Image 1 (cartoon, one colour):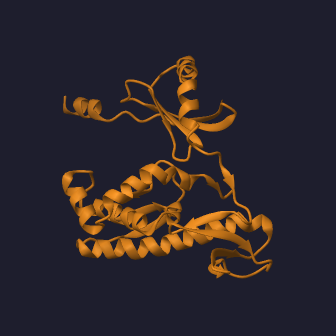
Image 2: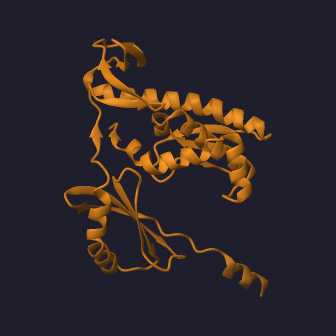
Image 3: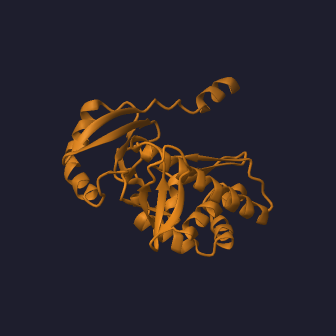
Length: 252
């Protein structure tokens, strides 16, 4: 009887998600369909930046039912996606924000040389060397490097304040979340956050560090977060209003 009960209590293995591409008002969007045995209805979510969609469906749902659902929600998708600008390619002369400050992208014309911020005629610029077709990659690498530098300092400083230890810090380009914290102290962040204002970067570091003490979003968690970062509420509002814009730039 005990072995039978143990077998019955094992959670069902989740089905593998599938992907497809759908067209919405001329936009070609990646759609991820994730079957979930716990889902009782279909849930559609627009990923940050408006460049992809995620559909959570009850396990075993037929393709026809998924297609019918998407067809019925075309109008809703068109209305919601209209708020998102289309993806913007990186090119010389465009502006990119670094820690909230706009910098004009300037190619140095040199094949070698580090990517760095500077000032030309009183204007903040980002100087980038290398071939033109490597421009986006070089800027992406620079942003990842700067994000890691900022978040490593901030996260370890916050962790020391609450007597916790950060095991490791990694940079990712996630669309569904800005950061994550594992039970063994590994923190992960979206490097795109380095384009946000400084207090927003600090909030993200504080948020994930607070999870080292509270792996939830309880009142105690938010109390720790706000103690580490007094501008928590303002940073949350900024991300809600502007976070999607950080996903618009296409780094290839």
